[in-house]
Length: 395
Image (cartoon, rainbow, N blue to C red; front, top):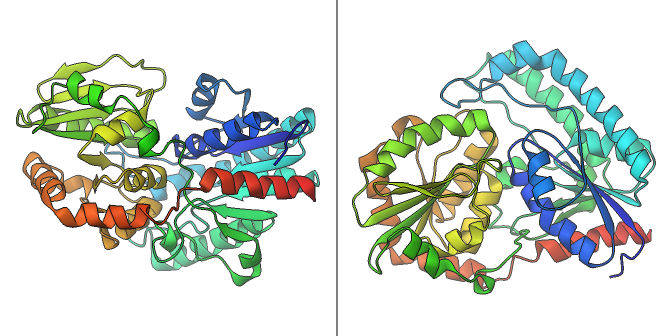
């Protein structure tokens, strides 16, 4: 596939780093094949893209309200930002139209951003959508049932029409029955002919990673010690409360359980700080080394981190962000398929974490499950995404 002389515009969602993190490998491959790429995003994702060496423009930011525990407060979001979010969406679309017109791309690629899809279609350009959540679900306990039905129906109508206007919808996940984001899809039949289960976008496979042995040495782990990689990702207001909760627990772990915790701060540097059994690194430059070195993973319920953990054959303890319905759905699927265990943030304590670590690392069934799914070769997401973009380029 030849992309020489083509221009590709990429607009990933800027909430957390999962969306931009999976578009970067696609952008690298497009560039390697001769394309010129341009990013548009917002919040922390802007600095992340800059650090990867790609040109990026900043769009107006959309975010959710969280309380002091990191719990998503949907009621506060609806009451305080309902109208302003729609206003911001309109501003985003206007900004995207201007950025796209200025760059002059041949194809527009959105990762979970309605504004990028809308702007691309308004300008008459082919649009590829990377998506693992077609339907946004409202937590039933958050608001009264009548209001939930109205909000849920309104969200579904707007999103279905928006996502469905894309020329191709790429789901970066495993095919059924192993799809992690299955509960968040529910794509209407009207759009099914444009849907592709593309496989996971994995930049580096485990056999390509070097230096994982050094990770164990750096944290002082012997051959018999357990190494846990705590990848606490997501928007700052959601992850900071969990980080503050976990830090003293990890510091007090037994000597034979070493924890490396990444706080996902691109501006915080990569200098490790060790206290007790815990080593904290604000920004891990090569997370794949830590994934490969670890015996188990502790993470939020983000799609990208769960998928990476599965591809690296590492069982997970998943602590989804409270009231985050997509993370709940991802977590439930990972547990159902036998790839990890779930724990509510309110139930996190030292004893429970150590008990789960013991169970995950000593049960041979986990290794068998990971071996089975990874032998199926479901990690061709980059190639499949690039192929889908190339097909739009050729139309």
